[in-house]
Amino acid sequence: MGLLKRAVFFVPLLASLASCGGGSSARFECPDDTATERYVWDGTVCSLRRDGFNFSVSSIAPASDGSNDLYAVGSFTHFKNTAITNFVRLNNDGSLDTGFSPGTGFFSPQVAVSANDGSGDIYVGGYLSYNGPTLPIRGIARLDSDGSLDSGFDTGAGIGRNVRTIVPANDGSGDVYVGGLSSGPGGAPTFGNGPVRLNNDGSVDTGFNPGFRGGEGSIALATDGSGDIYVSRESAPYIARLNDDGSLDTDFDTGISGFDRWVNNIAVATDGSGDIYVAGSFSEYNGSNTPSLVRLNSDGSLDTAFVVDTGIYRFQGLGFILPADDGSGDVYVDGANSTTEAILRLNDDGSVDTGFNIGDGFRGNASLGDAAFATDGSGDIYVAGDFTRYNSTPVPMLMRLTTGGVLVR
Image (cartoon, rainbow, N blue to C red; front, side, top):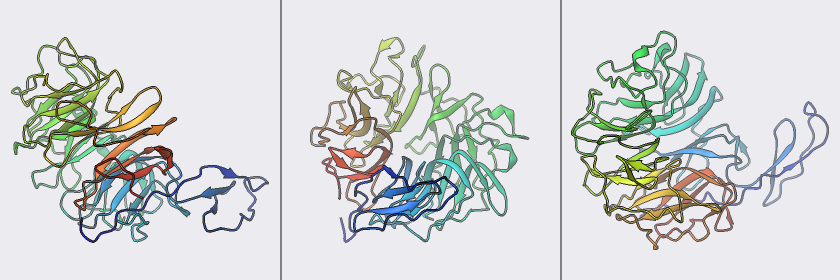
């Protein structure tokens, strides 16, 4: 694991508010800080903060610069006792990276994805707008590792504001695939809502044109060196494999009807098979009853050896599918039942890996939004979402778990 200390994100968050009296225009003195309690004036009330985020974290992305740092975006307005809006970079010990300052020009970032060029830069998207000092940004932006806007990445006025999926290409081009776009003024209507491939300067790659709407739920890169991508579709068969020019790869055969309902998440297995995991609200694949999480072979046929038990959990992929990085073919997924939100590790046959023990998991109205591997070689995973407890231990919207499911303090 090396000499790096494991992150310490995980001291309790108390979301209760202590009223300081009077109207919102008045400024009242907050109680004095103590060793365990800090109060922050937000213009209306004194908010009691403890370590962690005060509201949900929707997306996380490990930095690609070797620092083992972590980017996080969400609806939060504070980290620990520091007022910070929607977007942070955390050091590998869990502290706030005060050298990362994206400013206050961003509105509603929801997706964060690290550039894969080793720069430490970050793509941010969502129902996004940015009114910066140099140029307006809509939908997606690229930021340098210090939070400053990368003005060399400019999508112009033709890109709409709602970006749901960002996936950097793996061909060394610096291009990026985007799903969820709508064409803005002057935009090319043939691209609809994506998927779109943007050149490394932010312009639309007009040589990539699927001719159908897709990619809003998920985009995943094929790992066979072809440059192909898997995308969710907005109509049957609800999934497709695209060649590097956007045309359908007909060797990936989804059969007569494919899935009967939405695909929310796609992930490529890491065991070298070329198979993919697919989760969504579907219950059939080509007329055969299926659970809401399946494994498809590389030719598009159903892997009937992968069977999950939906009698306990449902797997709709609203949060994540994270194939294990150890070559086992196992996969981390978010699952839920009537009382518990959980992260599970499944074996390559779909059975639950009992060595990853979540105990009672997340209780109440918890939801999981994203997961990512720590980059320090530990095998640990970060999990983000809207939750305050894990196995009765208070945690503030972001946590780190060992390969056994133990909370890293």
